[in-house]
Image (cartoon, rainbow, N blue to C red; front, side):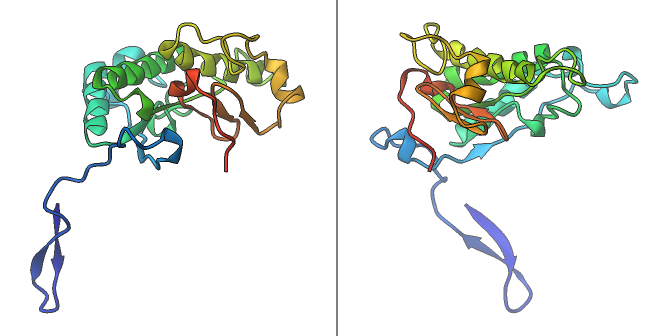
Length: 212
């Protein structure tokens, strides 16, 4: 790995950082909770000509799904984790359809599974499932978060039934406001931050540790 930088004489000189490629992967002997993972928040790859279309927002046919999958796989091959789909993928601005976001989530999870690095994926959760954002009750917003958290978790573990674990009752939206602090939930199977929500699906069958 090297880079061209100007030297004292004003000429470009190549500086070598290391001889081998940088390896960002986690050694199997290192606990996942003790490892500082670097995540990339990738964008969605659009089909050619999308910018010339007149319709508002992004539709499913506007996304080049195969190119997007290849982009995700490329980032994973570099040792990076992927945070997807987040606002960098135009979520919440151009993309607000839960059906599209769900498909993007499935793409990220399946690419990671094929690469054997499902522990490197975190998925966004939001309020796209709310039918009438301007008039809905807070409980409906929380319900949207919960359903979107459950979706990626169940992709990794079909027996997963909610943050309380497989042998207890699933999480109910009301539990967020009555049982847990309003801004964060640290439970058996997932970590939820309502202000900037990420869902690590690999936590489905593990006991999470409280945030530091």
